[in-house]
Amino acid sequence: MKRWAGIFVLIFLCYLLQTTLLQGIQIAGVAPNLLMILLVAVSYRYGKLSGLATGFCTGLFIDLVEGDLIGLYALIYMIIGYLLGFAHKIYYYDDTTIPLFLVAVSDFLYNFMIYVLGFLLRNRLHLFFYLRTIILPELLYTVVLSIFIYRLLHKLLQKLEPKNQEEA
Image (tube, rainbow, N blue to C red; front, top):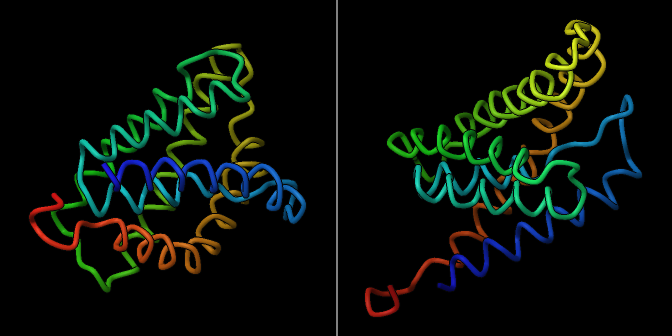
């Protein structure tokens, strides 16, 4: 229970940072996706079901605060969190290359799903423009920021672990 309460607090804090502080330091008109870094950290550490639940909570939080359509971001984050959970089988505590790769893939998948569901279905077929102006700059910015943020999130998630079996 302590872990889930801590993850929800981290979701809230990452959302606040993403929508306030990081909007002020945009590069090329995009801000990094801290929530995706958190989703990678949780899914990679705890597996598919935790990734699914964290993705749902993250997406629903975004939907309730700023979404036009309730459930769209929840579905997208849920799918990505579940898929990221498959990487739990190759989890290694000190490895940071796999999480960086997962952040890149998941951010690309997230933005591509936004493009398909938000633009392509409305007959806006400017994929290369969207790729050049939104997807790639955000992907690069998120991956560079995740080099620093992932370790911090990893240590915070480790502190949320039960100390012994009686607490679990």
